[in-house]
Length: 300
Image 1 (spheres, rainbow, N blue to C red):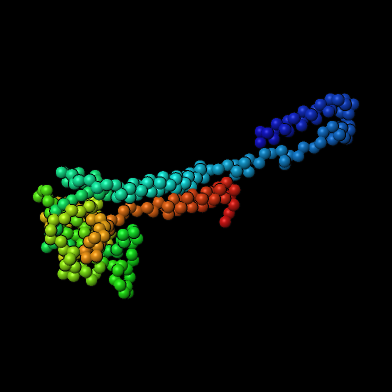
Image 2 (cartoon, helix red, strand yellow):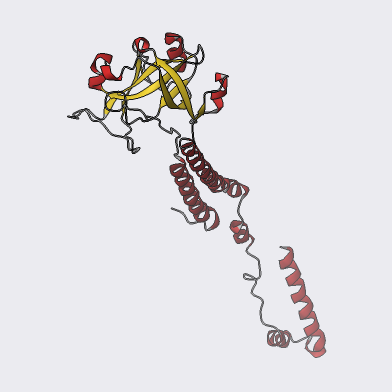
C-alpha cells in the first residue's frame, strides 16, 4: 500500500508539471488531458503491486526444515553401518588368523583364558568319560571348513548329530577343564557305539579357547546331560570342572573312530550390509518426498 501511494503521488506531481508547462491550457481541460497522454503512458496499477503472497508461498516453513532431519539422519545411520561392516569384517579376519597361529601352553592362571578366545593352546591329561555330555543337535563342519546341512529325511544321517563334551583332567595340575572333542552322528551318540574313541590313556591335545554362551531367546531348558548351547556355568556345576571350555582341533588319526574335531565356528553376526542398504534406501526415499512436497510442493 505504501508503494502504491508513492506511485500515485509521483503521477500527481507529473500532472502538475505538465499543467505548468502550458499555462494557457488552464482553462482547456481537453488540451491538458491530451498532453498528459502524450507525455506519459498510463500506469498499470494491477501489475505494479508486488505479489507478496506468492513470495511467502515459495519460502520453506520451519516444519519443512525440521522434516529434513529424517533423510539426513537415515543417511548418517547408513554411513555408520558402512563403518561397522568394515570393522566386523576385519574382526572376523583377525579371529580366523588366530586359529592359524602356533599353539601356546595353557597359562598357569586359568582366568587369563578370558582374554584368549580363539587362541590355540596345548593341553595334556586324560578324559573323564564317565562324566561325558553332549551338546546339540549340530551340523558337521568338515575338515575343509564346509558345514553340512542335515535334513529330516537324510538317509546317511551325516548332517545332524551332537558335539561330545568331556571333562579333561590336566596332567600337570589338579584342574579339570571341559573339552569339546568333536561331532558324532545320532547313531554314535552313546559311548558304547564308539569304544575305540574312548581313550583311557594320557593324551596331548591342541584346542581352541572358547567362552560360554548366553541363553538364546526362546531356547528351552536342557534335558539331562544334553545341552542346547554352551552353558558353561551348568556344565561346570555338573562336572566339577573349572570354567574353561576348549574345542579340540581336527585330528585325522582319530577321526575314523572318535568324535570329529575342528568344530569351531567363528560366530560373529555380520548383518551390517542389510542394515546399510535399509538406511540408505530410507534416506533416498525420504529425500525425494521432501523435495517433492516441501520444495516443489507437488501434491500426490
